[in-house]
Length: 524
Ligand code: GLN
Image (cartoon, rainbow, N blue to C red; front, side, top):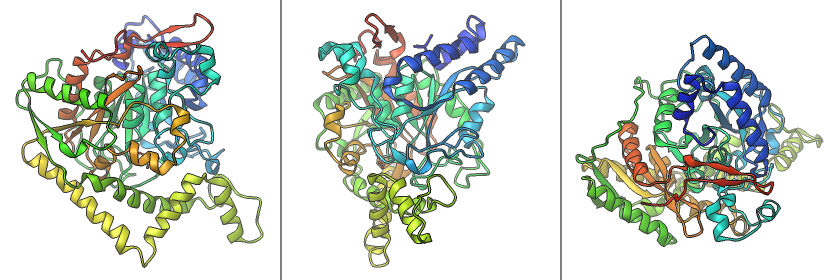
């Protein structure tokens, strides 16, 4: 059952074949067995068992709340959870317990979800590998998959202590890992520049970044307020659509959420592509794109065309400037967001208290890692009076041009864009950490941050395996608030790909775990 999709698991619970507490216990033991993946910062065992017992009762009375009732989920550790520590993987917030639940967390609880734990991330979401966490890096479960191990003959046991494993992507690497390894059916991540889609693609799961304003950010500890959005990580596109229906909607606590009521939808079983126009942005043929992804991308475009869609090349001319502008805007907002962590109200406070100023400085020096401090410095530099026009204002103007590029393409009749999600498959950890956080982000976010700059919805779908036996994802970008159309196309592609990791299996043969995904897990 651990390899099923959320919907399938919900159906089994509804039939009464398995009780929520049984399912919860299974997931808890898998979490413990796979603890070397480091997906979870906090395992909320007691809460999970209590929530599952409540779900048991509802099922026994024949009154389950809905599809999420009794379903194990995980939440990225930058969402506030009442009574449960929220660390943002930072020394600054170690021990911090929020007094309230983030809106998305509350909505999931109201639907009967069972919280397995809070997942690991790059500190405050700044990164793209889930390697910059005070709790240590997240390991990609595919490092222990048959497809990878068979190609890289290493003993399973050695792989655990060894460094021969690949990154999970980030910054929601813990969430992607948790779903991919079968320890929960849904994980919530956040997406500011690609942090949901990047790890989803590296871990072979579906990652949805909704339109900005569709899902509340209340209780998501802000990184870049103008771009942040909760992300949805699931094993299939249908599940992402179901969960979106539960989370979307206006929230009095987030004035940037749209007021129009959201109509939850489910996706059609038979999908007709004949009236659809798919755009292939030529600027996404970026330097460094792996030949494997390039061929997957064009094969998929061909498939869509054969199935009746109109596929055409389009141009988003300002794309090459996006990553630099993202950096300016991201660090500027980071600098102001991080100002609240001064040792007075939240988390860590230094023992150095010679003066208030000395205490602030020492608290921030001790509490933040190099990456966060570096971004605060850059951001403050861009915001200096003499630099403001030159950097911040200019980046804002380019951001508008980037958004306008998308509007023009969509107004010309294109419904959905098809692009790669990342340049290549997941890098080995030791290779990844050779480069600094900023360089890595510039490479990893090249195809993802443009949609955050423009506020558009995007989803990554697992589309094939690399020659090293690791998952590769493709990204679909939709018109603002057209998630139904976006996910319909994504589902169509998912169906062609024979990638569904639902045949997940465990082999505890020699005391180690091998995660077995779909038999071929390859492009049809
Ligand atoms: N890699 C990006 C960054 O470090 C993405 C961050 C995110 O989406 N949370 O800024």
